[in-house]
Length: 243
Image (cartoon, rainbow, N blue to C red; front, side):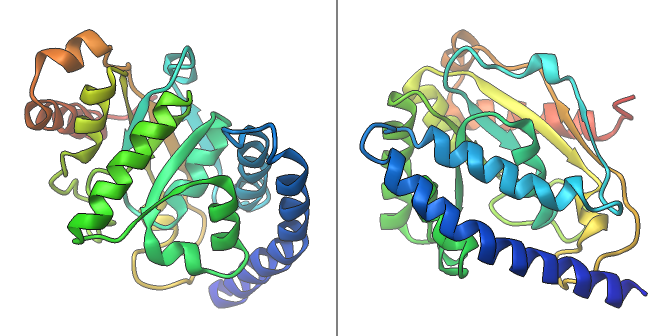
């Protein structure tokens, strides 16, 4: 039964992507000249990505603390990383952001091509040149008024335990004088494990939005110290029930 449901789900992903990607290209062509932040493209993509949780009864999503989301300007959003489902779930926030993703994802037919149209930010892990380019692009995006989404663990946790963080997101927040918005994801690792594409039955998913860390606090600490501070905040939140 799980295999049948998984085949149906991934079939829906392929079919919907084949229908929606041409519409994304059309929207890109219409808005490119005046929509520098690609706001319309991201809004379209947020709806596209949300289809896969809205219409999937196995992945009910709840958002806790929506009122804590910083919307007054650009922010560096950092979240724990458990699954491929994580970014789909974060699109449910319906907030404007660019997310940093590994280079390979941009080569995925239709979905990856749409990521390029949206101006999301590629990163080839372990390559100094790519890391520098990513950091520079993040600076540009923030200066244009867009937020950034990063998973500071760098790769998905296969055990559900919080991995060590990389400092890039915190260096970006500090150098640009913007808040850091910690977010805790739960349930995505059970919904779709790191290895494999078989849906694991019904697994509720939650997004807990924690209090943003203002620029004044970000400025007080070195990036590594802020990194450890935020990791502690997320780890503490993971240990409790958001309800």
